[in-house]
Length: 170
Image 1: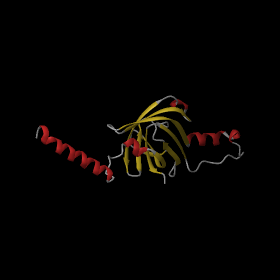
Image 2: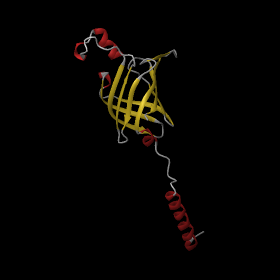
Image 3: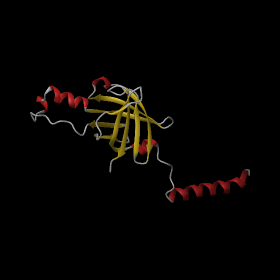
Image 4: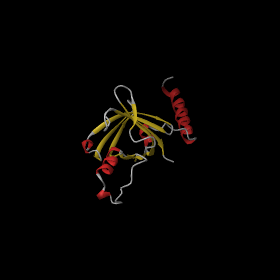
């Protein structure tokens, strides 16, 4: 096909493309688009070099991760069984109460980038309840399957690596 014969073929292909688009056949959303939204924690495990696992925030972690779809995120996670402060004043907790909260929770926020090719999220942490992460950049491999999101934190704040499982919030 050359010259004038190719014009009708090109026009037919353009028409087909427009017809498919108008029928709702669209490109698959990017991983970044699929990630956008709110996610709740299912599990967070510390994995030691010997392969042993410990639930970092207990068997029923509570928390939320929000990806806004414009490059900003916020993450908060806590044990479901954190003790209440006897004083009922967060500024007057006991050493044991403060230790339980610090060891049983984490939060951070900042910006993120999704690398479609290697399926990683890079968190650029503005601020964290673990101050050693303030200003850090962390790359985490992830798998997104339907309403389940899994990622690995290669250097978890409590030692070893962390394996996180989240479910899309309803």
